[in-house]
Image 1 (cartoon, one colour):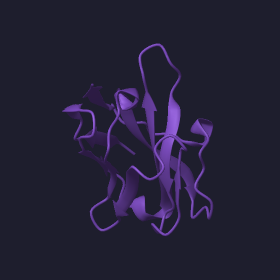
Image 2: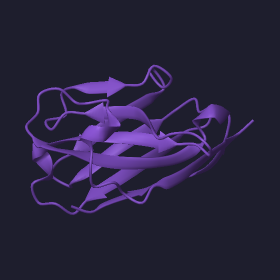
Image 3: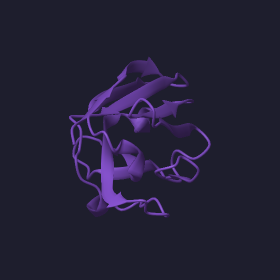
Length: 126
């Protein structure tokens, strides 16, 4: 499966962005999806995940209450709405797929995910 993320950009503190990720796979609706990010000099970290049906979501503590993950299975899309952005949110954001179909618990662990997209840069200035 190929994933392509988009929607990044440069905003000021307190601004908003909406990231999108489109998947090429026809069976997209079977799989949990996640968003991760990687800042310069840091390891890639979990941001948010959503179950295959969209009913269960998980967030890193650092983004809880500010970011919202959602999906549209009819369009093979997953989104990350980011509000109240902070400079520490600056990173390249990646979407990824958990290749295990119909898993009830969306994983927050990077190693469970594959099919990483190319990433989209988010820069938040103070």
